[in-house]
Image 1 (cartoon, rainbow, N blue to C red):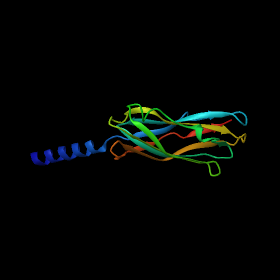
Image 2 (cartoon, rainbow, N blue to C red):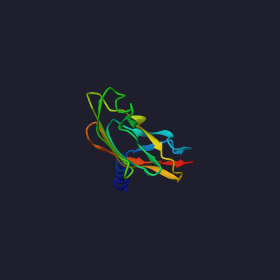
Image 3 (cartoon, one colour):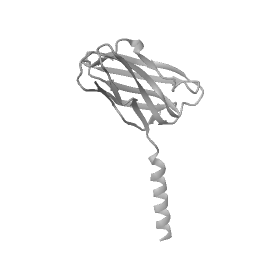
Length: 164
């Protein structure tokens, strides 16, 4: 009976220790009110509860009849990945205002640990086209790795709602 109890305790401890954590990536703010054509607004892509973050990849989808990203310089890397002294490089920054997609891939390298906690991965400035249909800015296909290239568990939370 004692062996069985020890076995159950060991298995329970093993399972609990393997569950780990999940970083969260989300859009902030979650609600944006726009009034007239040409108005601009910024959203941040935030990472939360990260540990030793080394690289990130994500897609943003949006309705190009409602909002567009006018220029490459409207997509700005946040300071989070470089906050521990690592060098940061953007591999992909593809804006497609025909289909309403933005693809981003960012990695870091260096001798220091990657950042942990919460921080801004990227800031994106959108321009309102004037069409007042409710729309969303959707964050998907999020992938995170640590500085060694190991995939981190991640959950995506909170798309942004565009209202008039």
